Length: 131
Image 1: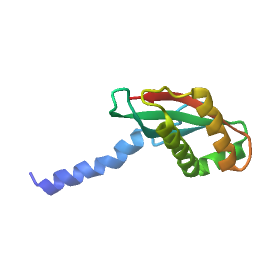
Image 2 (image 1 turned 135 degrees about the horizontal axis):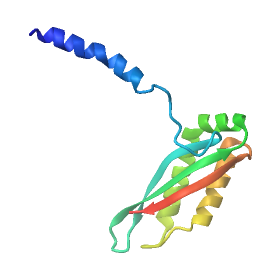
Image 3 (image 1 turned 180 degrees about the horizontal axis):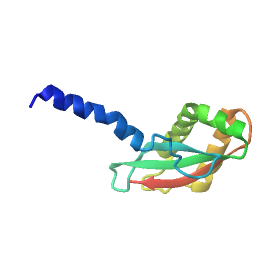
Image 4 (image 1 turned 90 degrees about the horizontal axis):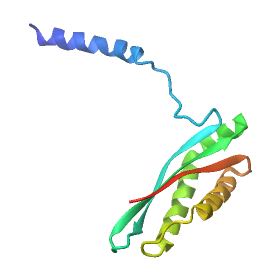
């Protein structure tokens, strides 16, 4: 059997498999006005003195479609602002200290309003993981 024919036949099946997979973009959840932000990660010092990682998962909830589009377009700037704050906050945590979720949510909401230039997007704090 000719290898070229086998390879050509296999390659011709790829577009059919892709179109059968659904091709439509799937939203992760949270509703039409929800913008999910990728996890923000920073290093911390554990109780035993070794390095650990703090991960903050979050998103934005908007009721206005125009604000949602603005938040989606500003996602790289939002992530940079969030990462800078979480890294500075994690560096100031005492060894083995636990993060203050209320303080984090309040300050990250302030950064959201500042970065977007207006209020209207509600910052939602998902989880804070320490590993």
